[in-house]
Length: 395
Image 1 (cartoon, rainbow, N blue to C red):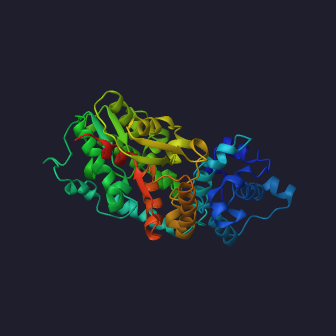
Image 2 (spheres, rainbow, N blue to C red):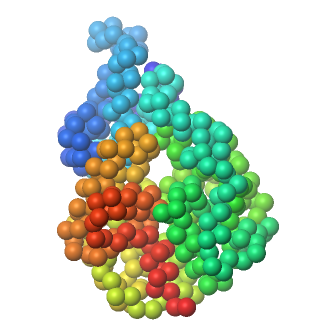
Image 3 (tube, rainbow, N blue to C red):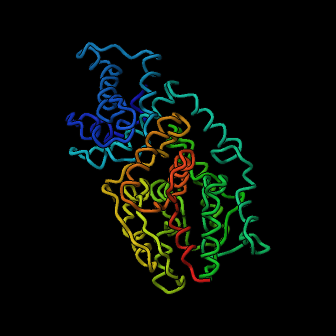
């Protein structure tokens, strides 16, 4: 392992941990697994111990030996069993930028050849197909063919004012493909001049960060920026919070961007999406990358409240305190069972509200919760907010 994967700020902040254990108290992975070694406080303690052992002077002072490869691999098992939800960072009284440290730590472990082998699969899938699922990238917009009245151009235009960046999950998972279909129908009804990128859209690069392959994201960033430029677009819209957050934090500020909740709110306020009554009681799950990371809390709630007949019941822990669904940080690929256990926690929390449906604003959240609900035959609707708006939209 090497210091070169961390910023000076990260190395200094890592030493500021007071071992208060608040991060362990709110960690969804710790709660689901009952394993304290998945906590942020354990991870920081190990990282600081390793850093002392890797520096000559500190090694002599603290009489630490450098960790063996096997020890690093064992440590990586705890590092990667994390959803990168950021709840630890939210409650840290020392203000440590924990999510940044976790991403750098994963890159450090990759450089040290001490990482889960599933990381190789993520790297190979992206290198070969430009999407995390190893699907044919030319079929990114194949979901359009399932629409009853799709235009001949299939929403792939030479030029348009708005680019709808679909994201890998919505493009390829049948369970999630109803979300871009619903959004395309809403945008068309609202007379928004939009286009898809189709096969010219590559993965946003977010899975690379989660895998510890941050330095490989540059190629994807440059490609996607150029693809949008070629469309002459003045704005990029995302229904996937991870895509949105990746563009927001790691892409140059070349275009105005918006999450679909912000964009739909604008259209609804402008009267371009008239809504009918919908007799439903729902609760809202704040996606980690949209809520805690991007601080978009009110737009989705305003949309829900704008639909006549819909009653919103808040989850006990909401907004910045909303627990993760279990689908983030590549955890589903690294530890499927742990991802399911975290999803179970989330669904049980939702059921206690008495709501008939849980609405979120993330395709991965929909997929993770819906998979658990279906497998366990639970009577609960899991909807993306785009689907909810489409249900209420006047024909």
